Length: 327
Picture (cartoon, rainbow, N blue to C red):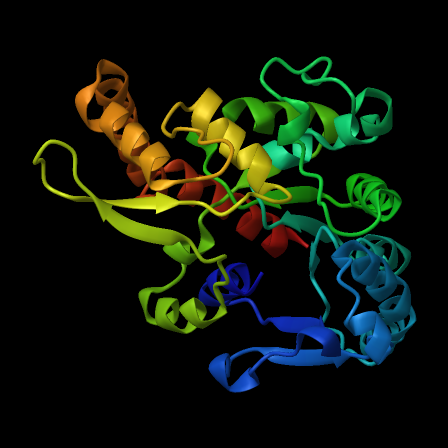
C-alpha cells in the first residue's frame, strides 16, 4: 500500500494514509504523506491472539464508525475546489467499500498479493465439502494441500473473511501486485468474475521513483529463508534457497512456480541436505534442469520488459492514474 502511495505521490496526488494503532508507522519516513491513526479498539488479549483472521475481522468492525465520522466531517468542511477523489483500500479492510459507497466517494480495491490466490476464493467456500480429496474439483492444477488455508486459528473465521473480502459490490476497479505476463489466465478469470477493470501493476517498488526505493525497503517484510552453498561434481557453488513450510497464499504461489511456470522444484517432507543435493543435481546436470533454467531466463526477460518503459506494468499503472484524475 505504501509503495503504491509513493507511486501515486510521484504523479502529483495528495496522499492521506489511514491506519490502525495496531499497525502504527514511522511518519518521519514519509514526510510527504498525511497520516491518520484510527483507534482500533483492540484489547491486550485480542492483540496477542495468534488467529490473525480473527484480528482482521475485529479491526473491520472497530474502525468503521471512526473512519466514517472522519470522512464525513472532512467532506463537509472542504472548500469548492477540494474533494476526496478516491479511496484505495486494502481488500482485507473490506468495510471501506461500504463507507465509500455511502459517502459517494469512488473506491478502488488493492490486493497486495498476486492474482492466483484470489481466483481460488470461490473454491475455498466449498472447502469443507471436499477437504478429504487430494485434488480440488473444477481446477486442473490445484491440490487440496495447495489451498491458502492456515493451520493457525479458526477455519470459520478464515472462510468468513474470504466471503467479506470477495464480495466487492461498488468499487470501480481492482489493483493487483502482479505482472500481466505471469498471470494472464487468473487475471482474465477475475475480470469475468468482477466485471470491473483489473490493473496488474506489480511490483510497485519497481515503479516508484528511485529516490523513494531506499525508504520503502524499510517496510518490506519477508519470512526468513535458509541459504547455503551447494556444489555438484566440482561445478561452481550455487546459492540454494529452501523455503520454510509455506502458509496462506504462498502455497498457491508455490504451486504456480512448480506446476504452471515450471521454474522451481517442489521438495516435500523433511528437508535434509541429501534432498537438496539431489534437487541441485537435477537442476545442474539433467535435461529437466537445463530446460527449467531456460524457462527462468525467458520469464525473467518477459518480466524485465513488462516493468520497463512502455511495458505492461507501466501501461496498467497509467489506467488508475487516468481514472483518479477523472473523478
